Structure formats: structure tokens, C-alpha cells
Image (cartoon, rainbow, N blue to C red):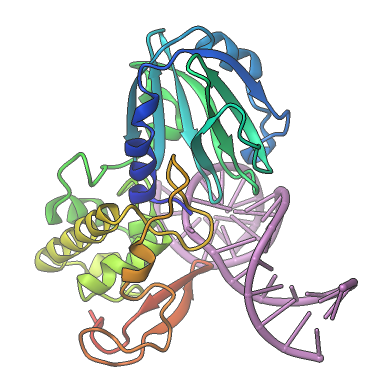
Length: 276
DNA sequence: ATCACGACCTGGAGGC
DNA sequence: TGCCTCCAGGTCGTGA
């Protein structure tokens, strides 16, 4: 579900939680990704009695800082939600972490498929965490340009689509925005990265930045599960150009959009104007 | 090292 | 109605 624009939307809408003091931490006891149990003791130790001081994002990871030495690291996987509720609100199914704050609210993490991740990291040393250590450039907070992409494309033979979704290249692009960015840059998802040229790489960098920025401006893409920290859906699904639009006319040339599968993932593109 | 694939898990949609 | 199959925004482990 959540790619960079959705995670950033959660970060922005979670801001009312800044300054809240965490009084207690509850967990469901169910494991998340890779069958890893939630680190209950570490969560309680790191969070109980602490004030939330900052909300950060790196790629698709959220970092919730406290006035203590440790931070909460959250990845939403496919179906994860991080929301602020009133303490009395009914819990939605598959709630796995609840942080009760001093003002009568709760910050809840729910995740039906349990592909997400909730961990404790030492503030300042986040990048040493294996999940974050491998991440490439974040296109919202760092300068993504053609030169960077061209450099990272050297001696590789993967498809452009796989290249864009590789989190060690660009952190935050997922299956929706890979298709969208490739359409914007008029490049074929099947094209090999070693065929990138300077101008094509520049177009691709711009396509990535633009597709992410537009989606963020609309509060993210809600296809089925995504909501922000207040429970509101984003409106970007209505503005997707190719994703999930097989058979509809290409906005540039009216050719029907095609669906194919690359590395097991649905891929949408215009077979006529994305030829390079 | 790089790449493609299947596995992980639940729920919703569509076919019969 | 029920049962079946397929599909879903991510990441990781495996084997070529």
C-alpha cells in the first residue's frame, strides 16, 4: 500500500501527536514481518513516560523520536496503518500496537497482513539499522537527478521498472509510482537500465520527483487500505495516469494502456509512447 | 554480485 | 448463499 507519498502523508497528519506523553504500550502478541515477534519489552522501555518530539521519514520508513535516547521505527508494509484515536474508540481488527498518551488519545498501529515492521532504534544511529543502512537516495529530501541515476545504473542489466523499485537506488518508490514515473519520462518499464543515457536519466529523475510530489499534494493514493493518521483517504487514485488503467486511452496518444507483469508485479504503460 | 521468483498473510472481488 | 481462485501498495530468502 504505502509508498513515499503515503508515508509522508501519515507523517504530516501525525503531527498533532507531537508533545504527547506516552503512558503505556500495549501489543497484540502477534508477530509482524518475517514472523518476528514485536519487541514488547524494548518498546515499553523506550517509550513509556517519554514525550514525542519529532516525526521523520526515510524512504518508506517512519521514525518517531522521543525525548529519550531511542526512537520508534515503523514500516507500514502493504496494509499497515498508523492512526490517532480517542482512547474510547473501538479498536479496528488487526491492531497490533497501541500507545496511550496522557491527553486521552491513542496512537495505534494496525496491519491485517502483518507485512509491516515496528522496532526500536537508537536516535542518531538509525542508519546502522539493517533496514535503513541499505537505502538509497530519498527523492523528497535529497537531490535526485539524472547523474545519480546514471551512476547507479552502471553495470546493471535489470529492467527500468525493477531499478526504480530497488530501495537501495531510490528509497520510497513502489509499484504504483514506478509505473507513473516511467510514463512521465516516456521510458519503457522493460527497457534495460544499461541503455539509459544522460537525457533519459534526467527525464526519469524528473518523472520520479513529479509523480511523488503530485501524489503527496493529494494526500496519497488510496486504492483499498490507505488512510492518513486521521483516517482520511487520499484522492490521488483519481489522478493516476496509468496505474490500474489497462485499456483506457493514454493521455498523450490515446493508445490503450497495457498491463504486463514484471518481477511478479502488475505494470502499466503505454506501448506506443513509452518506447525507449 | 545481480536478477527473477516465490513466500510471507489476510481480505475483497468475481466466477460458478 | 457458499466455495473457489485470483489479486493486492512490500520485502526478504533462495537458487540460478
